[in-house]
Image (cartoon, rainbow, N blue to C red; front, top):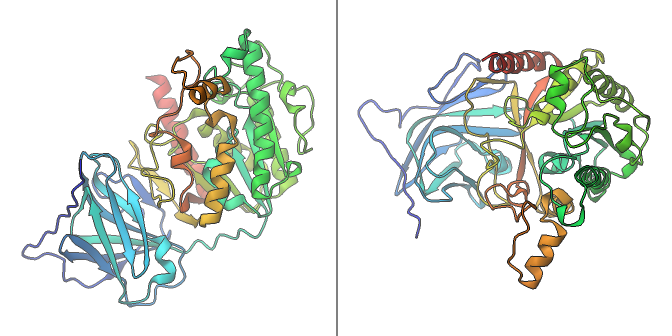
Length: 460
């Protein structure tokens, strides 16, 4: 079925279509129904701009007033998407354009990412928004500009909950920089991807942990990070929340009685942590992260956002980091990411297009700033091959063989070809990577809010 482009252009008495651009204080008290993102006081410049248009295309005129230095621009608009599978808004100014996709049937306030236009915008420049299967309501829109001044020339620590998380969220940042990539767990849980070649379940999952650990320390080399600058901490997949909730308890692997992370530490090439016998406890995890901080001495840390990422290992990776940061009292910028939002469908649309904020969350999320990091076509290509190198993002070898020879038998419960909706080869290689910026001080209230909600749900 052919998609229809449609835009809502409202003209009414007393409308703001002819209002001048105005700036207002950036406060966290701002609230619009359906939008749960809040920004800390002083977290960027906020302007109200008229969104006008004719002939089914709306847009804004870039403000004439000097706007200072900025690297990220977000425009909040009201959208209504059709039931078509791939609704999008094409954002353009002059020769520069990109497409931002939405969920089928999406509606309400959403943020369009205009950051890629930075070099093309001067006062009076027109930014057009053309919808395909999505309506953008004319009227007043909120423009937020963030001057993050993130210094990526210093020491960077990428903290990944599982093998492949660093590549999915941060490859464009860490590649060919002074980065250390540290993965918390071996990824030794999940689907029985190799059941056809293993009879013993514990053996299968130990092998899966080993091969994914090797992926986590070698694949970053595609981005110029040698295995001497990577490390896998050896903790067990899908166990971090249990470790946190039972801090005095040793928590074994999910599919075996082994509770010694030393069984996996030995496969590392680097020497960031000792390769020794060590019990899988919350105290040891926090202690090991403190050691990592002291050795790496990062100026910038990339880690998951516990409120925006729905995976428990992702959430509690950052909770453990927050505890370690209370012991390592150095200034640091935190760039937090999400790899698991909206049931693993976000970001939407095909690879190579622009990503913006995920849909509103059930609870308010207080942010300092947003940073949209541009990823060149060359880096996107490298990122794609880094992801393809990760065993857990592929179909199993036996299933691949079936596909190659045209044998349509299914060997349950082996991992099947991942559907397009959740496939990281679609979701991850984008023209940008999105990060939520925090300081050491602002991290704590956000983490406290997450833990309060975590305890509330546990008590129900």
